[in-house]
Image 1 (cartoon, each protein chain N blue to C red):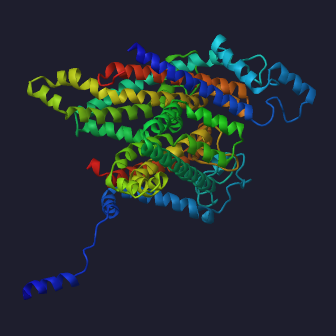
Image 2: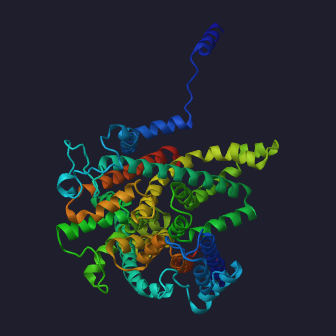
Image 3: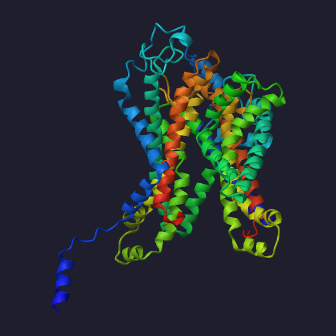
Length: 305
Length: 307
């Protein structure tokens, strides 16, 4: 009797067992994955480069170094003395400052575009999946229809018709890329719809849109995060694609695609740094995002283990 | 089967209409007249020009004329910038070029990618598998506009083996670099998909039965595993086609091959709405019909699909 009481007391005074949430589990799994952590570090470095770059750069991204102009191939080389750490571009503008600027724009388009796509896609998919039946049929048929259109041409058409602005680029890229997200969100919602907690919510008289917001969307979060990290690099590729064609960001602003395009046009003159610097940042960042995305998928999706 | 094809066609037609009407509305909504220049055109001249191109008509008349022109005469309308050219001329000039390297890119992507993926799956966890996986990861970060300059740098500037641009009527050495640049990323995707699905099929029960029967590995792969393993690859062909059409724009611009993409970008920079719209509609039509073919192919190969 006394012994049991002692044990009971002991148990009562013991610290509560710390629960391991799904997210805590996922975090430990993620940080055990070396490639994913490496990718994350690379991404942080690139982000840091974009943020503090403008304060470090001795030159402005629009400023033309007149002493270099006309003999870029010799005087515009990357060097510490002139302050052009990455060299200059064909017009004598500092490539370091321009790469910083291009990195800012490319990252911004990637993240904002992915954000728009994720929000639109998640809600569209969740609504379609939750209501099911005819609504689902019509909504997903619309997605199918939109998917079979070469959206890049429509996007370029949009950009030309409504003027080339950053805002248009964001909206356009975001609007054409929510389709996959909608499909994924719908698939997940279909399995969630029949769970007990949704049933309970329906039974207590919660409205359908509140259920979607409060009960369905939070449960989609894992998939959404994974997909969003994989979406950012494809947004960056889209933007670079459009800028490579000269239809994206406009001078004096620049982006990785525009810089790669410029550098590849100057290759013949032996000014390889103009191509290799933006190429390096582009490739490294994409690798970073892909590895982080893969790591997140392994961490958040218990199915694959 | 025929009812299935018929149903699919019935869906394809409204999709096409949506595409045409959508692009037309976009163009119609575009601010300013397509003939307005920086120097300014007298209003009377502008009105005359617009009348000649039928732009003074109300919206429904214009769009009806446009759609009817495409349906009855396959006429995609005029260019608003060059008086002596219409969209059909540009298509007739550029399309054979795009088709040539596009076709070869498709063949390379499917054959090389499929073979690579299947061999990687059969030789799972050997150096061949790792090589295939490595290639497909590497190709993910090398989209065509990144790969094209690298290829030209290596094969034209350093090695001097292949020309870095031009077309010359499609001589083989002018086609190689565009095909590599366009097909690589799709080849990698196909290899990845084929590997994953082959791995899955190889662990399924009917393969174990076939093995237990004592069939040789070669026969198991060719007779039993190949068909189900290729189904996901077939469903990827549609998106791959869209991607290649989009990528052909970069190829045309970078290698100056003179394909359709070159006209598209030129018209985008000139704000030549007529040409842009014509090319968008044409490529959209092609995509929709290609998807139709893929769907039918899929239904034909996969016995589980009912129609």
